[in-house]
Image (cartoon, rainbow, N blue to C red):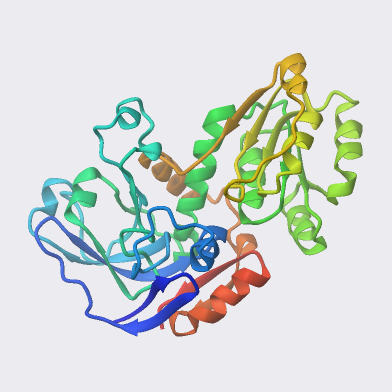
Length: 347
């Protein structure tokens, strides 16, 4: 089979390798699509190296179909069938560390990730190892989705984990800084939660146009403060979600938040980056400040439900497709921010 292998930073090779065979407790998925995100490019450049195994197959936004079921799998998935659509929860937790025991499996002290340590979705067939199956990280899909929709279960699940940390109420004004794929997903989830106003800021006119078509107020970043003041009569935003890792935005998020507001730093920032912030904004406004990283298995299950219910406009998010044989062009599009999100499809 064909597989894209990341041997080292900047060394992504399309290779031929033996297709996996399902041993006891294992499942093999035939990959139908894998979408890429900014983290994939950071892995490629070497900006992110933690947990990355040299020679691993990248890709963690995965849609597949059950190709082979190993002996004993029915003990965990009695109704699993060959041909059934499926994805995985990419965070494989140990279930025994302090975080796992306190309902923070997504922050597991011993976590392993698909596309980092486990071979991911940029290949024709992917092995789901026995420990992953036993842990319940395989998600068969009862109501089928388009492959590119199922790929979005991973980023949507991460958004849901973040939202659980701050919450969105029906009367809220929600500001989303950044109109990349994650920002646009957060915008749709905020509207689904019933937010009264959703404002998305972004410098690029193309992304603002997409946000507007989704039904939110989209503004240039330079106009954000005035827009928030106009919409809220100067009170500020109830929720501010930072969806782009620009350190300068960290303090602005606090400035535009209302008294008692919730600020979430959802984006990953460059390693070692710092930001000058005014702590009195948190103190006097009594702000709640949270982060958001990865997702629990239950978040993946909820994400699949939302995608099945049509909550997410998939075509607005996954705008470009590339064949696996042209995977380098997919990474180039990712680097150049062509469209919103790209999908890689096995030939």
